[in-house]
Image (tube, rainbow, N blue to C red):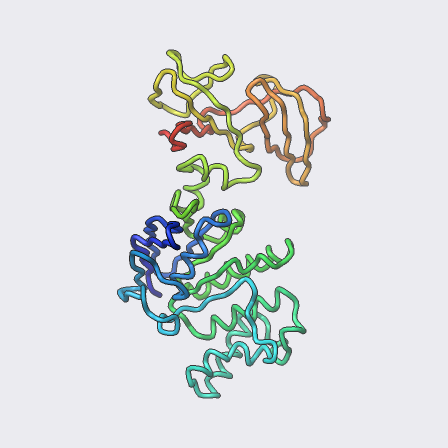
Length: 350
């Protein structure tokens, strides 16, 4: 297992800066998620780690070795692509063994390794088939098997589950997590899916516009988002926002006082964003009045969207509800569940 250091990475295309100084340190055996919307630079950064592109500035270290400008073949890295990238004229066994064959590994060792990897991924019965005879999930297992067979120092995954249906994505997500727990190979995984990020990663780098907005554990990022963007991007349904202003008495919105999450210094007359995740809101006999405008049952829980004097708010409550659209309700929350941000800088306070 090797650590991975990404130091001051910048990338400029013509006069456009795509990556704006990325610094990330990954421990040996750690599973890092690069998450963010399309165009944020996460795939560009992955390509540089893989050796498919070069940074304009900065360096990348794998263990103690500087791999910034090494050819891909010399980096001891294995990559799994979104498109599987299997050879259609080869069997599953031949696809898995291909990289070993290119390295002149003896045939007996190649066959032994193929059997070992196939058993790990539970695809022994598919070894004589060709990619066209496989389902999407089976093809992705083969792509993972080809990467595993190399015993790399670093695994790279580029949105590997994007082409799969919802049920299969859940299954393959569990497979990837289980695989990492068994091999403990240092891994970098790119996705735009925040559920994948939260369930798979030891740590997450949330990216936007070529910068890392926050780097931390899933728990840290969810419970203490550093910026408004992180708070909105991570979590479903999306966080509720109440625009508030500081006055001599504290924080208020639409003439209603808002209790602060702990002691926070406020500047009178300044605008703030008061964030409440949907699960922080509960239906009660007393509290903020509202009128239901939408009910979304999901089975184990229900999303309730309501119009209130503070604006539209969405609550995530357990089970089903006896209410209907148009019913009057009241919402309450603990001040400690609120997230407070400076409206101008978009940064978290406290």
